[in-house]
Amino acid sequence: MLKRLSLILLTSCVATLSLAQNYPTKPIKVVVGYAAGGAVDVVARTIGQSLSTSMGQPVVVENKPGAGTNIAVKSVITAEPDGYTLMMAANALAANMSLYQPAPFDAERDLVALSLIGRVPVVIAANPNAPYTNIKQLIEAAKGKPNSIAFGTPGNGSTPHMAIELFARAAGIDLQHIPYRGGSPAITDVIGGQLPLVAVNALEVLPHVKSGKLKVLAVLSPNRSAIFPDVPTIAESGFQGFEASVWYGLVAPAATPKPIVNKLHDEVQKALQTKEVRERMNAVGGEIVPGSADMFTNLIRSERQRYAKLVREANIQPD
Image (tube, rainbow, N blue to C red):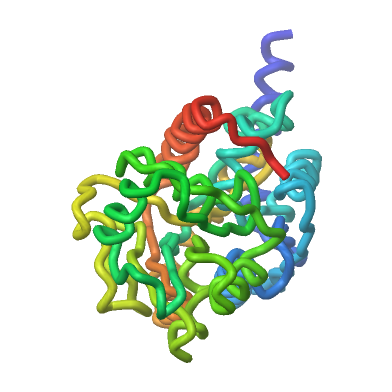
């Protein structure tokens, strides 16, 4: 019996190693929980193109928007754990475990982190005619009239919403949140003068800043943005150690074989060093973040804890 068990285990190990060595033998699907054209979609397609070149198989992006990305997450969790279904995840993966009750999934149990890709900062932007030109002036105005200054976001529980709630607590101010269904309508209202502020990722405001229709008060990241090099960071504005970025990373079903997980991680790390990927990330206002799979796992865990505390204290409800 012992010999038979050992033989079965050996055969299984050999089969798994062989699978990883031959992987991939068919197209790889990367699920995105947002509509095509957004920042997450752009990052997924950028990495997908690089992986397709290096691994010799097509990498196809499949957009599955809805339910705050929960539809996309669940489709990946229930997919065959063979390395052919991945997901380009963002902050919602960590936040939704607290926003939605009962929790729709457990990211640490149901998924395996492959690699962090990069970060794009959340920015606070205003109409060019707004009475404040930087964060310090905004804070002074908000303290003078608590809860009188409104800010729009892509929706309740969105990453920009959470980012501004965290910032407001750090600054000791009260702002009025106006949730929209997407960043574009919120930006439109700020440009039109119906709304003082908007919080979105850097990519969404770029064309409007270039045209002079918006001004960025601060980027909520530790480093200045490549697309807004003259705009101070939140740290430079007096909030050392504070960060609120949109991060992106690849995950796969939890039972994906370790050799395939390792291979995908290594291929992503190679992709992050290419000129094409670096330039594309800079173009959307972000920066690449190479590192181990464990680093990404720890980020998801720490973000889950940070968002859980915020959701509880601010009583944030999803749309």
